[in-house]
Amino acid sequence: MPTFDSDVCVIGSGLSSAMLSDKLAERSPGLAITVVEAGAALFDVGNRIKYRQRSLDYDESAWPGDIIEDQLAEGVICHTMAVGGQALRWGGACNRFSQEDLRLKSLYGLATDWPLPWEELEKAYCEAERRLYVAGEPSPCPGDGRSEPYPRAPVPMSYNTLVLRKWAEQSGFRWVVLPVSRNVTPTPDGRGTCCVFDTCTSVCPTGARYSPDWTFKRLLSQKKIVLHDRTLVRKLVLHDSKPSIAAAHGVHQDRPGEVAEYRARLFVLAAGYAWSPHLLLLSACPRFPDGLANSSGLVGRYMNGHKFFNAQATIDTQIYAGLCGADSLLSREYLRCPTDQPYVRHDLRVWESTVGRRPRPRDEKGQYLFGDQLMEDWRARVRGGTVRLRSYYDVHPSIDSRLALNPARKNRYGDPLPRIEHRFDETTLSREERVQQHIRAAFDRLVRTDNGKILSTSVGTYLDHPGGGCRMGDDPSSSVCDSHGRTHDHENLFVVGAPTTPTAGCINGALTFAALALRSADRILEVLQGH
Image 1 (cartoon, rainbow, N blue to C red):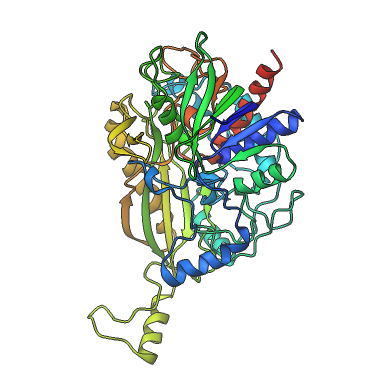
Image 2 (cartoon, one colour; image 1 turned 180 degrees about the horizontal axis):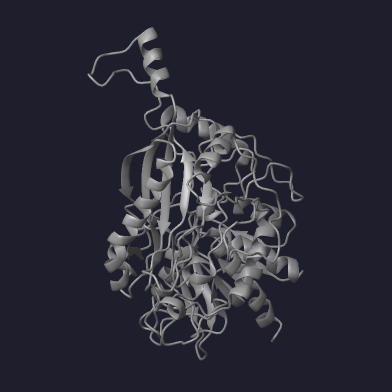
């Protein structure tokens, strides 16, 4: 059995892992850090334009090689497994939660409170924004104060976004350009700059949008970490006589019959909301028959995320669809709910839209259109504008919102894969209709300012920005880890990022996951130094 020794063994290589590994290496030079990733190290920025073109021409994946065919879990919204994780495909949105997210129980009698003060999370937000070079503008909404300005000025608005902002502000809602980790000028670490290709929803061919593989490539070139890719960690091994983790056992894709043993002073699960709790459940042993770190019985419980409500609408304001569909506006108007009013919390987002504005071969009667007829029809339909509206809204998980081992689906090694089923608590279910009515009213208020019309509405069929499964708390009987991700059951085992969140808020989650991981890094360094 080959063995690999280090000070810190990090399992997973997504956004949280990149932030944590970078900070550990920076703050403690010489620290031996091994990162183990089930997927491949693609490191293929130079090929992304080609991949994008093949995706357009042949409907191929724009990310070849980022999926492991026998690791496709049920209920997971993104199957990416590669160095960089799901943030290979993210849009770069870097929104903050609000203070209310940490005090739901105290303020509203709902869900639970997070076991950390807002001031500490806000400090970690500032650090995450600096490391990601986030571009943004201050929010005009009360309660959104910042202790530091954004590291970079907001991304310049496209013509359409500029016009849409003037239109949207007529509603009385307050708007900002969405804060993003996307460069329009070079960064000190050499990342590329945005060329406004408008491919942000699939690939970023220049590297302007932050991607964790960039951080890992730099750390490797500087010899600050060791990376073992294409190696699936199948089990954490408990020490024979102590409640600490002695090793992690993994298997490389090219050597399926050979178990590699990773030994470290400290282990960090940074494998995301699905695979971190999954590994803890797979690692059950006689002393922890329900899985490691699971004396509370809450590993894989309280799986969270937020729901979303969509609309397409027409307005009289003239925009030219297709300029930059990835750019959007954000309003945090309803992120705060007065405690003496029925609970409703959601964001508001606006994009340009091409719905109903592309050339078409037939008219409403089914008659074919050719030549001048097609052009006249197209010109008539592109007068005014079409907008896409969306709102993330706050929902709270029940204890039965669960990740469990699925014996009906196993990988090539015979390990049961995770199955996630989301369930909501009773108060969430009871207010669902009222919340959706509130969002629809906000959309109506927006479009009424310009003789607009809602064309269609829909509710998302999954939870976005999911988390949970190893929720943090002060009480070991009702949580898996503390606010730094240190598990209550095993002093040398941390879980970082998305799995530790008790609730998911109503805003993009990536910046919060990164901030929590950076905060965990501080505590990990203290533990390694004997404090």
